[in-house]
Amino acid sequence: MRRLSRKLLSLVTLALLMASARVGFTQRPSAAGENQFGVSQTLFATLAAINAAGYDTGIDSPLNERYKLRTQIREELAKRKIPSLPEIRDFYQAHKKPTGGADLGQYISFALLAGDPPKFELPTIELPADAEALRPLSELLARFYKEANIADLFKRSANAYAAAMMAYQDQVINILFESDGYLRNPSGNEGRRFQIYLDLLGEPNQAQVRSYRANYFVVMTPSSSLPADEIRDAYLTYLVDPLSFKYAAAIQEKRNQEKKVLEKYAQDAPSLDLAYKDDFQLLVTKCMVKAIDSRMMHEGAAKRAEYVNQAMKEGFILTAAFAEGLEHYEKMPDSFRLYYPELIAAIDVKKEKKRLEGVQFVEVAAPKVVTPPAKMQIDPAEESLQSAEGLYEQRDLENAEKVFKKVFEQTADKAMQGRAYYGLARIAIRQNQLNQAKQLFERTADSGTAPVIIAWAHVYLGRIALAEHNDKKATEQFKIALATDGISAMAIEAAQKGLESTSSTGDKQK
Image 1 (cartoon, rainbow, N blue to C red):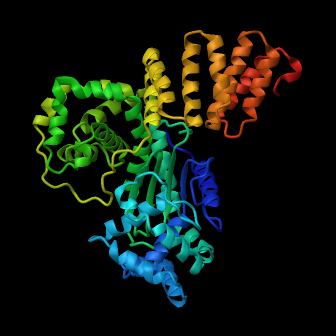
Image 2 (cartoon, rainbow, N blue to C red):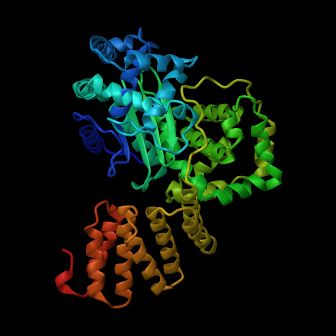
């Protein structure tokens, strides 16, 4: 596994802390950041409100005494005259859940989907059930936020949050960087975010994971030890899950072999959650994540084998196959993203059937802090874009072109259409249709899609201009690419090389 130097790790850690622990913190993941550890003002306001309304779960934990903030916020709010508080108390009691995790979880879901203060508006679309049930809270919370001056309390809490984050941030960075190192994952999951939020106002020792469209969240409360397994699994799922859409055709083909015989074993596993039984792609992702977990373990071969066997007993039926496939991946130079189709293709249905015949499924799985995720929520156009990218990477240009074109029927969103134009343009390049490619890259550049894609469109336009012996036009396009905010390191390198190739000496990049 590739490892980063401690010096580099420290520099990244410092930069991350400066970005997230300043007074005011971060409300939403920034456009420039990808892997973040921070604090949400919406989450803070939501949990402050339910604490004032009678949310007492875990209030006697020694961890509250260590960080003190939950007690201090509760005491401060108790001193204030807050006209909306009786309504919030009634609301909290009316929506109280039978378990502490579920009770807290619904408010975490609400906070992750709600808009920024002071309005806390939820999207008008239908939301997951737990958040949808809390929709009236937006108006109540907006009043509470103003009447209780939560903005001031949030600012005054900055030092407490910064100190708490310092206790966890080295471990968080290590988890993310080790995972990236194993998967040889380049920075740049365009339009997607992974965010860890720390909140000190909830029941201690909680870690809850959510995925909403392209955004993945882990919300953790004060813990005696970092919920490392939950964070790693959530981050690996964030990286691996989109690949199940990209390579959906390969997964479906494997699923159909011998009339879904492998899937039947999963259906018969008593302890496997229905979420995985109902969604084969979700099951494939989870098996892959568990296999990666096993390969990243530092305890040795025996512990790895024990972990894989336990996963198989719990119904994660492809974990052993993927773990064996990952041994081969580790010897290859490809990134995991590119090697993924080979891991799927390498599954030997007959071999796995024989292996599963010897597995004794457990009746009850070991209790977990994090419940299984719901099926990944994804826009149909987004699903088509990811599927088309997968077909493109497998060099199935004919079907990739069909799916990219389907996007224009599914959405009027210009950014998504821009990504479809970009996909079609690259296909045209591979088919040596330069005039068509030029038109499509021009449409991409004008679409308002992700800056990193716009930058690449200009790089390609520069290359086409070079092929047409138009050095002046090529220089112009490469310079536009370099001036694009959000350009990736690879695009910078490509644009600079393009400038060096132009024959206009006055326009060469030094």
